[in-house]
Amino acid sequence: MRVQTLGQFIIEKQNDFPYAKGELSRLLRDIGIAAKIVNREVNKAGLVEILGETGEVNVQGEQVKKLDIFANDQFIAALKVGGEVCAIASEENEDIIPIDNEVSKNAKYVIAMDPLDGSSNIDVNVSVGTIFSIYRRVSLSGPGTMEDFMQRGTEQVAAGYIIYGSSCMLVYTTGKGVNGFTLDPSIGEFCLSNPNIKTPETGLIYSLNEGNHLHFPDGVKKYVKYCQEEDVATNRPYSSRYIGSGVADIHRNLLKGGIYIYPTTTKSPKGKLRLLYECNPLAFIIEQAGGKATDGKGRIMEKNMKELHQRTPLFIGSTQMVEKAMEFMLKFEAVS
Ligand code: P6P
Image 1 (cartoon, rainbow, N blue to C red):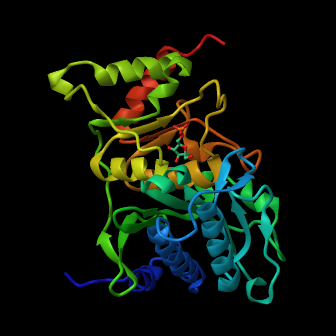
Image 2: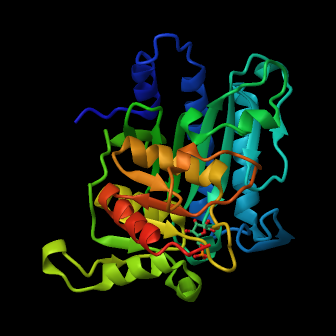
């Protein structure tokens, strides 16, 4: 099979967008470059003094890992010099990062990212990931503003993730399907490995942190019980798989079929995952692959953005599994 690099693929697909002048192509390439640099450090994490915690706590109240900061810095630096975005929002930064340099003065896009999702796993050699979401700016000129990030997920022009695991993969969509690229370290290029990814209508895997069971909504408790029942006709019981890195769990389910749920819990009464730079981009990808992403009631990508780091419950994966979970949520909805 002809090896097609990310760069070649982006240029080829650019023709899908008649008015594209290459800005989005360059932006996706900038992301690919930063991903290679982060992957190199993630792979070395066990060898050099980049493990462990910085002693700081981020805006989410989570221990900041040195690799979180490294990944954040790499993506911000690549995006600033790339000149294609007028502002960045990051899980690691409380406020947006407006970009006001010469190369970015005509930038058409803004980007939101979780630079290193699941980083609590980095010290134990478990896959982690970067998630990104790209919007066309709505502010008129100059550095981007908060309003550029208050758009619904349906307005995304592109979204993707990089998974730093047994291999480094970049998976993204621009609204015309989902394609996966695997980094070939021997040539330092992301090469097309999973063209036109479609997620199975249903699956045999459910992913959620069952340690929170006591505090789940009744609908989630009932759905988990449904997954665990013996029923040959529907291939139950399903298997429980939960890595603790959403990107890794959701990537596995994307390829094999399955459902990932992070519902409300007492510790996270609005859910834990963030709408802007985790749920919306993952929802865009899963929908483009034929799956579904909701907050248990409504479509993730139609939720209104109210604040930069707002959280939401997330039910994402194979359509039939998400719809079944939603049936239980509706049936056992707490009488408020
Ligand atoms: P818990 C990582 O912090 C993350 O945002 C997701 O990637 C992951 O699935 C989830 O949180 C893990 O959270 O509460 O189960 O440890």
